Image 1 (cartoon, rainbow, N blue to C red):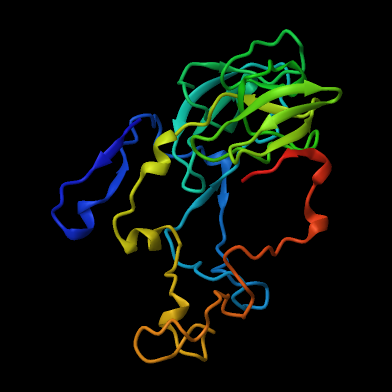
Image 2: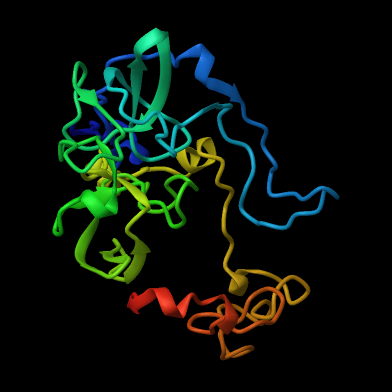
Length: 277
């Protein structure tokens, strides 16, 4: 796939870029694998905003993705590569015997007509799109959709263009280098899919205008300095006065920009060999 540039016929078009969707082979999703997706608008069950900057956006259907890949030893044929509005990576429609179908995350290089398999066998082929236990994947291999606990389904390394790498294996654990640079211990019995995820140009896309963010369901972010004192600790003052509050804080007065808010007990220290920067 590639990036599509636009002629600067309007100011917003000047820097806008998008996908050319050359890798997409099917426009409509599989009806048996979609469900309605209800939006929250950033509100909780009491109707109060708990997450700011969420709301609006285009209506979407949720594609049911098979993160667990538990149809072991049954080869499936890739019948389509599709666009998923709910994630940055592309998805692949896989058809198994007896007309069973499922969506999987599409790795880079996977094409229509290819065969993929999920296996627990040691002699399974090391091939892009195949899902195997870490125990049987050679060190140095790029992987994605990695389980943290056996049988839980892939939970990490699922966004466009991302991949992790098996650095080493020791006792019952594999040393996995994640996209953030963190090196983490993961059980050798956990499954992962081989390959790097598709749509590697995703990070180079320029939205070009504010309206395109609104289509994605992202509402505007206003600087605290531009608010009134009643709305933000940085607000108020005559003109552009940055003297009111020298230390950056949130709208609720908590320090930000470097202030750690994660509790110490939340860190899984025993599984982290090297922290991300």
